[in-house]
Image (tube, rainbow, N blue to C red; front, top):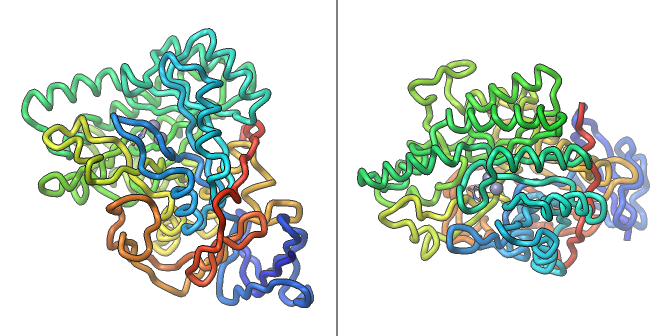
Length: 478
Ligand code: DUC
Ligand code: ZN
Ligand code: ZN
């Protein structure tokens, strides 16, 4: 089967050009001026008035993740189908090794969850929840044999996934030896746990205290510490996940200023949502937005002066423009309100942490283009091309070029949709963190390796189409 996408404007990191795209089977074979290729014999997708972009890549998801006494509500089947609806053609999910668990067995378990279930292609990072002699050996094995080349560590969640500084240093040294990337959940979990205990003892148990007990200096301090440890460990590449705070961003910017391989991602919830409008809602409704790092106050914490003095969101948008933030992911970790978020009724510390968003990232970051915060090119760069390069998938993924996988999204900028559970919402959740948001633009068509998944508001994909992507080392290093 060959496909020709005609009359669209192809967006890449370097420009927006009117070009037709020819696809043979699973691969892009050629780009040409509009009308250059004959339409005969091809399935033709007319993209007049629309953008043609490389499929979105979300490098931070948690499908079916056991967390906080429950399990994230999207399976690989439901979550990757929702991702396809949102113009995402590859996810990199977090396989989990719990403290005391065997890394290779737990990676195998993650393969078992995903194999034959996914609508789109998928890779894995490996969470190392227990740094010991065996897991350090396993890290090397995964890089050399399994196509898993990045490892997430936690400075938060003591007693669950937490690593102390010595463990972090050892894992970083191992990663430096084998060329792997360390991804860091950078929050000072020991201090946060004290603040949580004090808040609960005072009777401050509403959802908003989740954010108040995780103040931004504790994200900035952990970010700084991770950067120092990565330096001492031989300049291992370091990628800070789900950055939410201007003061943490300052630490990354300073390291990058010194030419270090230090990177960061943020997520739509930190760019668009505020504590006041979400966790601060009356009653228990704010539980919908409990995630870590937390959604923060509109203004900086009172004792902190930000980069521009305009609050965390302005800092994060600026960081995205300046490439201090290289990637936007979602940290998709959905929980239903009923029975799951409700576990924290009367005690915010028991609310499972996570927001579902894999379906909405492309459209939410496009709103930054509409608002003049980002260019079209930067939208594609932060949501597709850099994720592919950062995590060793380029140029198979992340670019519309001859030889690349035909993962392509046709984006219609001339229409408006409203996010909500009634209608445009396919994640396995009984609520939406983005309920009622009016979105300019819309996914029109989605192809994954040449197969049409979304067209005319219909899902045409199949369970099991998605293949495991064996990743190489990062291609983004200075
Ligand atoms: N943060 C979340 O919000 N959920 C899962 C894990 C994490 O670090
Ligand atoms: Zn995390
Ligand atoms: Zn996460």
